[in-house]
Image (cartoon, rainbow, N blue to C red; front, top):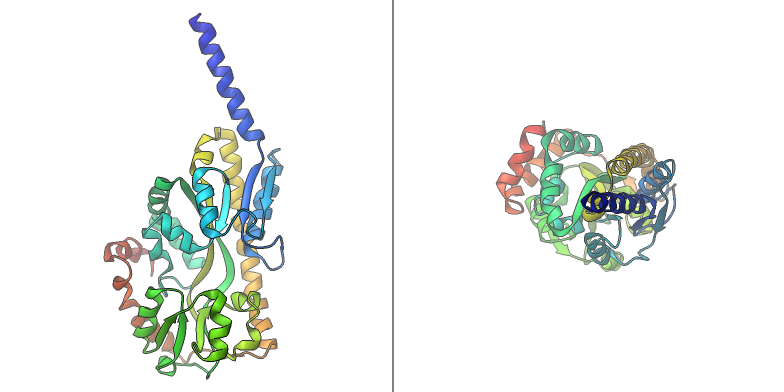
Length: 323
């Protein structure tokens, strides 16, 4: 009797594992299924193609069809969505430490970001916190290019040029950074930013060229200053329950697919950075690089208020790897 019970239990476990592997992987994101222009989909496509090589099907839900950012975060934490690609602001809800990764000027570009993530153990810290709400973060999909300053008023080539400029801020943290430069900040939702630029409520904002192109703001802005103030990622999120429930072989396929998806995204991001700069230049936005030594001034001013936005011990985790 005991032997039959054990055999029955093992058979049931095997069948459950097989069902998990056979079920389509549900993937959701906000963008479009566009390999030319959508960073999220570049990752998702390569991820899906890799899984298909092992007989694992995927179902992709683009364009917020599974809900907006907070809705998708809730669903991935509950296991209703297996894979979600979302905004970093959603990651902040899952991991307080993660805010440190996106401080302005803490990392210059994608290459430095990836190197710091690999060496510092920061991903383990993020996942320790995120797992408490059922989320696992295996990596990031980059949108191409780095954060720079767009504005409607004048060329910016040195720190002094931004004094008294009113900049659109995402949140209170960005206001602190802008104030450290001598500028003023005003929190404006992204949906209302075009009107703010047109009415003078804000004269500029911090973003990469890819965002300005995607948002159709090329005609609203006149100047762009590359600052290399940080890369622009989207967050890849797994349902932790789903991932942990996979058998070892299937989990290996998912890990392989993740690596391939991220690699494809990085190739795309590098190529697209130059493309998007050309688009804004062709659209009439003047690109005005900083004078020698001026980026160091922006960086020093920003770093002086880092500890006002995240705890110093968070910064200390990354500091040894930022050189």
